[in-house]
Length: 305
Figure 1 (cartoon, rainbow, N blue to C red):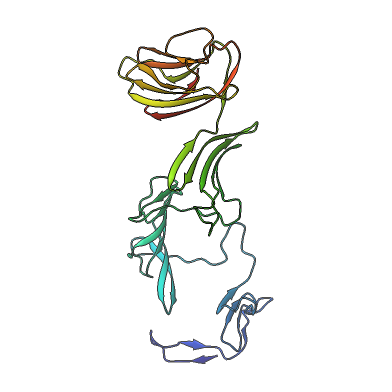
Figure 2: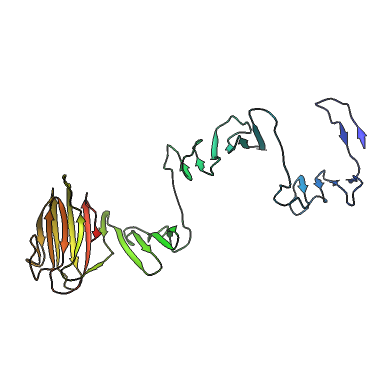
């Protein structure tokens, strides 16, 4: 071991040997000919890092640790290269990934004490909080299926893009499909089709309705229910209709079957659009169970009653 001048800016100790023995059973610090340092082992040539540590720490304890005793409870690690620098900081119970090595610089990523992750957001208030002046969210599926799944327990909502990268939209019309899957079945709820620049939305979901049964389009209420336009189609017969609902009253605008869809409770009809106290219900009076698709444009919601 050699000694240098004992100043803050000077090297106070250097080791010309290849190892330092702390009187333990193994060499504690190793320095190879390339000036790479190994703690607990010789420097690992595979990793090629300037500092390499190896050992068996106590259970649930880190292999490397540092403690900052001041500076408003800030502790950090600086990372440098020729193009710039970044920092990883803990401030109190918050972890921040900063744009420079200094702890007071802008944090691009923040993890708070509750585990909330903020991207471009220093104070996330949800599990994932993204903030940006540009489009803030993008997910990309790079395989040929082009699916994105949203999971809750055993239930999966799937968003699918049918247009592959590089495909001509005038040749292969782009489609977006949305479906829902649980343990029993998959239901295709709707799809949006871009055909020669004209978007078309179709309801891929069907529902069955027994004779004399109803589906609620909007529940009864004391106030005004709003206005909507909805299309209904019965799959077995091919009968369909376009209906306008306005403030608790309904009008069949177009009836492809002639009179199979009416606004009174009439026996033998495929669809009776009934209003009461601003509520709207759709009733099957065809004499047998029927299978329908329905799309609503406006303020009403569909719910099986």
